[in-house]
Image (tube, rainbow, N blue to C red; front, side, top):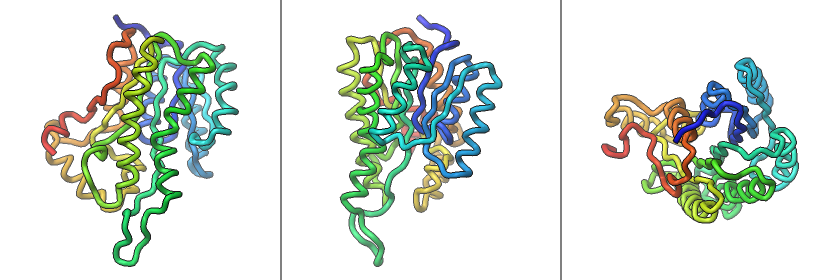
Length: 264
């Protein structure tokens, strides 16, 4: 069975750019209300404000908050605010799309720096563990319930090895483990939890990866669709799955890559 997303409330962590932004727009196009958390400097904040106005122009409610989504203080402040804004109604979608990690090798090379314990801890906390903490607090506040869908963005870096990507790769593996555990524990509540493994997608976070050019060229050349995955492709998949009233699709790593993983 499927249902309309119109009037639902949806929370996006990492809402101001890339895949998070595309999903905010796609959900709003369905008549869904948007709560977004992002962490930007001055220029990014201005773009986020413009995005909020764009979303509201479609007739939905939209509220963005510029704060560190990996901070316990942020959750302590925002979760009660979300309860008030939503009237305590459970979220339809929680999307974890936080892409802030350290991109340096484990061992020093050519006189460069090596990964520190602080950098490793930060990367895993932001890109993996924060999913658990947000889920705990939202569930405790009654904002996750029958029909809620939780999605976490992972990548092929969970299995493939590239230079400087070690800490982020470890975070993706931890994130997927958290998804499985949360799926188990939330199943009795009718909440589905899945990881979405997007294909290589041109986003600000991808552009921060050293020597990302060859990855882009390889994916574009080998993808059966003859092009890269776009943030809008991911959003289309998320919206489609979120219309389902079933919680039976849960605990999975779902490829949203046009078949890229088959050929690269």
